Length: 551
Image 1: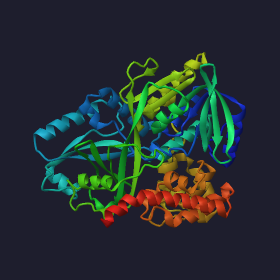
Image 2: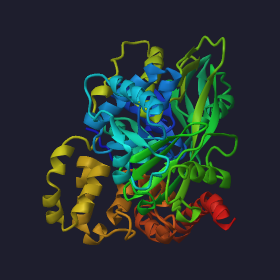
Image 3: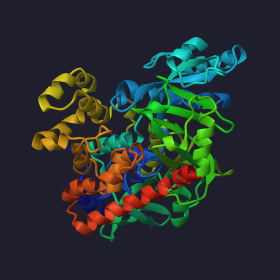
Image 4: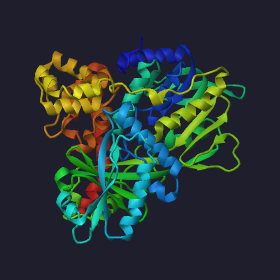
């Protein structure tokens, strides 16, 4: 009855619906929490709309450490409930909800002392494993000797590393995962539209009954009617609360997390590495044939829309990683850098409208309006459920319980069977087996959408950049099925070319604009503007790296 496709035609239909229909729930924000809330609400049988001012996952949800994990460091804070909850979500994602997107990854916790440290860390990891419960999709931790570490992880300094403990977590392309949640929500009937900015709320007495929004493409005003509104604005929460004249039971402080990307041959273990730092932890995460290294944790009060790394951020990451690496990482090794903002919630005392938890907060500052902030990417589904549970009180009717813990994301159905058919698919479509595996790990059973594009035009099976796995069909697909509206959307979020490519994708920006422009009805002016906007962003993100290399 519904389609999961997000494209210009779907967006036009969504704008018509937004202006003419009344919704049970309106979601403001297209990050992982927003699309998660849309999916939770629509699968309870509610009439749901979601609007996002920029693009799906445009903020924090595309700039995380790309880990689905329990939060090993929270054990030291005795936050066992949070760790147990996150581990449950991790197991769910890896096993049934989205195994095509969330993959196990092993980490080494290097040890520099033979007895005391091994006992302490080992006990912590034993508890980490135990908190998962009985159903376990990932292996348990294992102790490794110094000799073994020398064999499997030659980049770790043998003069100080006495051994390690290997444990497992999982990783995800955060922007792709957010997109698949959005498409799953659309598949179940949610009305979804990006490029729609909420300017104000509509009130009936004290109750919020909708929102006044602007279509940023045409600048047309849209009045959206909704019985309940949920705002999932992350680091924009305080700004929007003030704009709407609402006082929430919490405030949001921004913390900047920076990551660098280095080539695969810059580090030589088979596993990821986790290091304890003076302020937090540092991860060295295998990412295809590259490594992501981060993160920082520093207060931030700059532009929420475009957080940028500084020279000091990059140097900090290099310094912390190089404590245990030989040979050491150099600034010249870095392929890319990206920065994201964590919305850290500070709950206000004496608030009667706020349900408090350590990691995320759901507030109801006015009848008909709920806001959600904080939390971990891993527990987005739980946060979304909590927000919808509160919002449906304004519907004044019985509403079904959440079912998202039983609901696989689109692409999960049939994924394991398709993995067994990689050679057959490669032969049928005359593409390399590596390309088939790449597509399955990004689209799952929706690979058929990409294969249809290749069947219509064999040239679309070609790689966009020789050293990266993305093919041209994915660029077209980003517009025809995944709602991309700009070069930035494609190179930053639908693919991760912006930080995986040595040139940050600038050498293919014109070709991307040509491919997507045909679908978006662009002329030369629109293509040029989209290219320039992307190139300007890339230049700003690389400033800190260039400053460090030239210093």
